[in-house]
Length: 325
Ligand SMILES: NC(=O)CC[C@H](N)C(=O)O
Image (cartoon, rainbow, N blue to C red):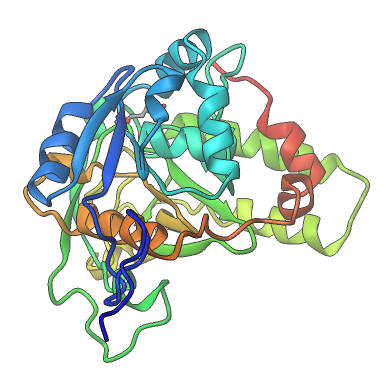
């Protein structure tokens, strides 16, 4: 007896999709060409996407690094943002790198004056340019064992950093708080840049002025205060304007706070760094795997029943919209 042949795009008997997956790269601005070439090498059909109708037939989408404010302006003007929001709300695979991760966050600090549109979908609070300006760009070895184990802290076999990933950070954001259901994949130790400190301190002040003194608020204040560790003058900064380093940081950097730089929620992945600027294709392989699994299972992914206001606190939601220079 022969096994039934599943319809195109559905699971074969081995669980693999019966066709190549098609991945779109949002090509409004930024480093989209580099993503294309890596994904093509991995056997995906790759298409540049600039307009809403170009989402037709895609299995996954990459939002590249670049300038999130420019992408937001063009994306709104060309009608691609509403389509992206729909895509995300359907739980379909999407990966944002650097500016792309900013666009996928529900709340972003350090927005340009006047604010900027976000696609949203990840119930996280992010800080744009956390590590500083372009001149504070850096590369750091990242422990990527969570790509196998699911999230930081769930290590099996202690394979941490045996084969660290060379992560390139350019005017990168950091995740300050990850809401329920968000898996943390990678962290680095680094203090926020001076501008980020100013913005975060202002936020803490507002938090402290808030009469409501419940557990959520107290936790938020503690979390914010932990970012303002005074640098140890005897140690040199190694990563970003505020200094820091990867999970392999030397002893003197221990006092810098840990920030989250890679996350996943269902089929949504966010990385603060630029995997398209290295020859190491582990992150692209990871995303292709997610896309293939979504195609095979025909699932859209995890839906978040919690509203952003519930997960991060209504005050946080309001404050995140305060525009800064
Ligand atoms: N390399 C990048 O993608 C930088 C992102 C940029 N800081 C922004 O806010 O959009």
